[in-house]
Image 1 (cartoon, rainbow, N blue to C red):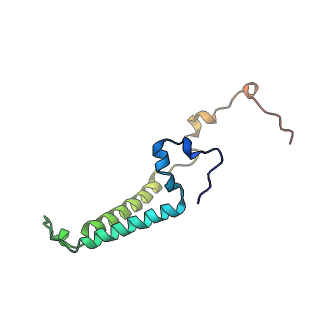
Image 2 (tube, rainbow, N blue to C red):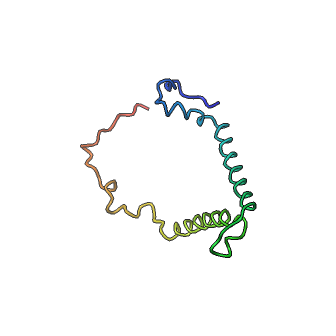
Image 3 (cartoon, one colour):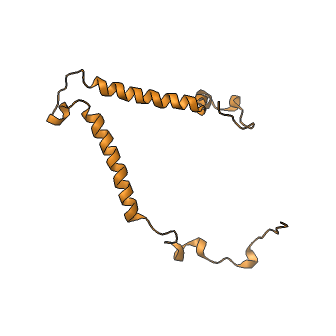
Length: 116
């Protein structure tokens, strides 16, 4: 079980926060993720066992929407990586006009003495 810092007292949490304390445990999160995997697999399998009324011939393929969603999500990730190459800027791209690049007067800096 995950250890909380001593300053956190669950009794002082709001009611909704108390209801979700189970999510603080990594084992509970793993069970939730595996439960979602099982739900997705069951819904995919259920697609084989009912009659579909489709508009397009491709929709008749069992699991079409699950596969379509998966591949479109993967395509979004790939496109985002490609866009990153095009849109990425150097670290100092805005530096000439950046506020933090301005020199601050030395007499107005509060410097702490280090006795190191």
